[in-house]
Image 1 (cartoon, rainbow, N blue to C red):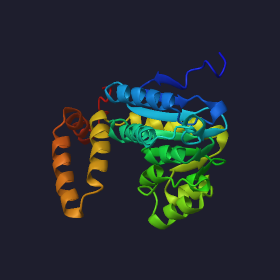
Image 2: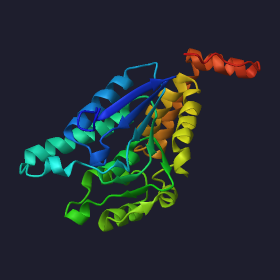
Image 3: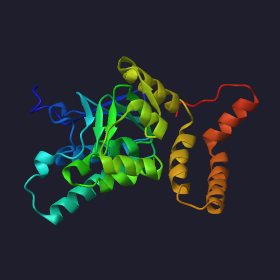
Image 4: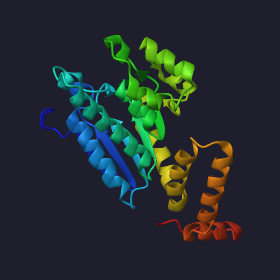
Length: 261
């Protein structure tokens, strides 16, 4: 199968872990309309599948994702078209946050513009230490407005604005320091290290995983008093979950809990 006929997104589900692989290496995995549609459909389906615990988002080729597909966008002199395209992309990004499964970006190469946004949107991110990151739209006269939403929720304002206003790349170790990614590893260890992290998360009680992600993002915009009140309510409900009761009882009785669900 050649690149022209290959699927733009590949999905593999193995032992509670779904791996979504961007498969447009000849286009640096740019987010075409088709790829955005496929990502939206795949993520929405995964969000409804209780058998999937964790999602890994990876890519083939030299780039993780080069942002929007400018070649597809070129010549579309319509504000309506661009607004609908960016809304479509934003909805896909929001779906990553809304599904109950943690999503881990596995970044093997360049992540620029909306590709950097994709990394920032994922709940966790691992990267090869050779990967680079940028929000480089400004070099083309286009401020990366939608990527700035995710970026500014990962790193502090001055660092975010420096990236947005210069369009310059940062390396993987700087991305760790900024808080954009969790870890930078040797390229030949990226797949294994990402899988190890996914398996570690998948091994935890499902009730805590699913409640935890939703709770974490819900409390972020709250003031501290409201956040604590909300968190206390969530934790009280979580304590009554049958899986949690079993795990606590097993801990107290020094037995291994049944986490097969």
